[in-house]
Amino acid sequence: MSHATAPVIPPTQQSAAQKRALIDSRYVAPIFITCILLVGHLTFGILESYPRTLLAIGTSVATELILGRIFLGKWPHPASSYITGISVGILLRSPAFWPYALCSAISIATKYVLRWKDRHIWNPSNFGVSAMLFLAPETVASLSIQWGNYLLPMVVIWVLGFVIVWRVRRLHITATYVISFFAFAFLRSWIMHDPWQSEIAPITGPMYQLFIFFMITDPKTTVRSKRGQIVVAFFIAVVETILRLKQVVYAPFYALFMVGPAALLLEMWLASRPKAAGALPTP
Figure (cartoon, one colour):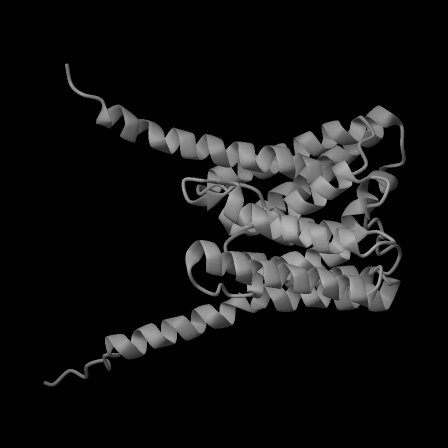
């Protein structure tokens, strides 16, 4: 009795198919963040202006291409820099043009300058936006618009966002942060005697959607273990709550700025300890 054999894909064809799948997957996040921009702007006018957003995107992509060529000797894929640029364009508020270009350039530069053990430490847009908000508060502010009573845009974006982070196996990070945010929102409401609706409201806006779907889930700047990622997401919410209780306006950005790199550096240090111990000479 003969057995049918499955067709064997030649190595060259297999690698080509894998490359096509990889290339296609790179466009998922840019398409999604563009949807956030379009829905948010057409519904509430979240952009300061189209020229400023295009400047942020153009600067981000150009900086990525130049630095990638200088430091890596190749032209990097523009998907990541597009996400950084469009995030800057959405999140920043300034009457001037220069903060958009400077923030994008700083964000991308951190990927090549602030590195340890061949990994960059900060999420690019988180570093750039946090730096601009801290160093130039007279000129720069952050997006604070919320969806308000218009739930349909928020529901659509959240459903798409959860599907995407689930596909890239980052749903547990977003879910941990969201659950923690709601829990601490009720705690803040009780401590500050504020209506719980006002404490929950920020997470309904496009700023938080960028934060929970792109910044805290960035594969390049998150710890490797699933348990560690859950713990880090929880502590980001903890630090954010502390900052909010101290009336820090941009609490989520600063919380990620502090917690994310610290956790990543701690993980890399712990991973290097057995190797260092094994390298010691035996007496």
